[in-house]
Length: 279
Ligand code: GUN
Image (cartoon, rainbow, N blue to C red; front, top):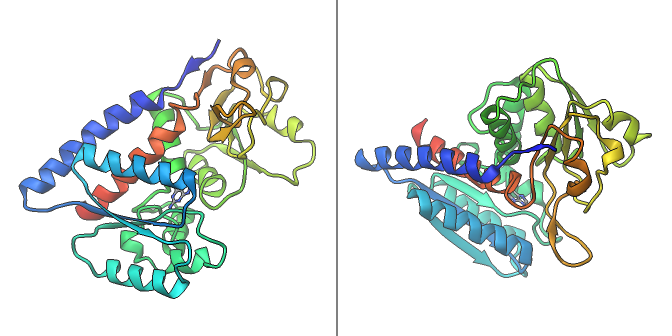
């Protein structure tokens, strides 16, 4: 039976630390502010944005929501970002993805001042992650690294397999594991014999977006299994990418869904927002 890696527990400890840092800044007359932009009516995005705002409140960060209609043009969105870039009350800018299909996401990301890019999606910050010298780390991979550290799980020399090659999770996750001296492999939808690859993993990160994608026969005995998925199964229940019931019997450590990676992603957003003021 695997030990559960509790994102809730690691989050609670980290958020306490962040709360103290915000209070310290406040005592010096500095406020911390995050602008959160949401375009359209994506219900999952609405839940994420609400959770992010609630987390800000919890630690004393001011959050400013910009909820724009689905029909918002790219020019209008870029205009708003331009204003926020020069707004001194706003230290971090987050534009919730996905955006409606008529808007070019990369153009929007590129428009955010990299010093306010608390998602670490801007090419400037992505480049710094490649070099291994960074101000902001992308929230989900950074949250996973925090959890590994908290549970004293060493990455150095370990075989790490990441399933998924997104700019948000898969690619930066690989870079952070590499920085900690892991031997890293990225698998994706075109990978041949995926199971052969995943069976070599000491640390397996699943960021696929498909319910129950990782089954026990794909997991090496004693592996550390990190589940980034946030899906609904056929019964409408929230679940990850990993078939939890069968994999937890084989793994040494496993993250649950909910209560695993999710809370850490938001916590690292708070971390980046405070850092934007501290630096
Ligand atoms: N959509 C899903 N995850 C994220 C995230 O971490 N940041 C933003 N901006 N949008 C997302």
